[in-house]
Length: 219
Image (cartoon, rainbow, N blue to C red; front, side, top):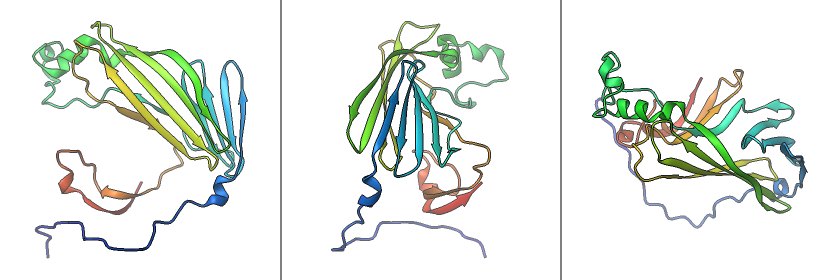
């Protein structure tokens, strides 16, 4: 047979069972920090995790576990995405520069060619269990005066876990942005992915009802 329709809804949950707490044994490990004018290195002894920050460029440089890299690049701000016909028909040359189309406004503003300028790189918090590194960047666009100010906080805890937070403020008079998000590149050998969430295909805020919540695997 064929599946014609489906629906998901939350069930009322009444349970006295507390959520499991994170292992305190893992969190007892210490953080070893080494700093130079160029880099800040963090080693989480309990998790055999090594993290290196580029303090001149302003971003994560290396993230390794057991000597194996887990990231090739990122997480870094991403302002660009694939162009849809609603943004502008790519086959029509005039729509690449037309102010009445999002594509033309983005191209004229130079968003695709914007480069971040580092304003500040600092260690904003350090304790025995975690350290937080802050990077402040300013994005200038060749075709407009308004700038984008971005603050990125990256927290490393004693287990070697990363927590990344980003705040962005777009100046008045700017065109709308194609995207505001993170971009990360993983090593090619990390082919298998497993997640709990919506799937198995991509979903967006305006069409997520078509992607069921579940546990999925993919490559």
